[in-house]
Image (cartoon, rainbow, N blue to C red; front, side, top):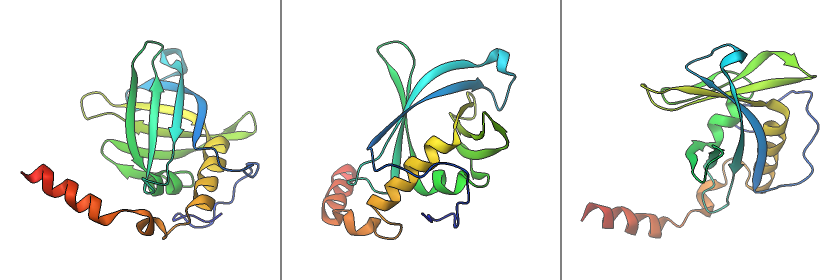
Length: 159
């Protein structure tokens, strides 16, 4: 599957169909990038819905009843699986080396005062993203939006 990032040549297995939620283990690295001794292993979820075709939800399970949530551009994730992408609070880049026969993928989140990085399995994310593009091909996202409802919501916020 070719998303906005172009050809995604990778050694990952092909996807086995779309699942709206990808559950995967991640390592939380505080700061821009610190040693593995300071990392914490957590669970994360990536979710995709046709009703919000441009975005991917990222949720980090902290082990308590609460979780941390972000919304990230699907295209940002797509391009970031092959080359560094983004700036500011949302950045993504693939590793240059392989670990256990698969590359790692890094997602920088947070704000300027509390940045952190998530490390995850490149193949899992890439196969899941490919499935989202099979469900909603690149360029067809605007056709799925209810533009009138969006305009009403924006006008209501203005009041």
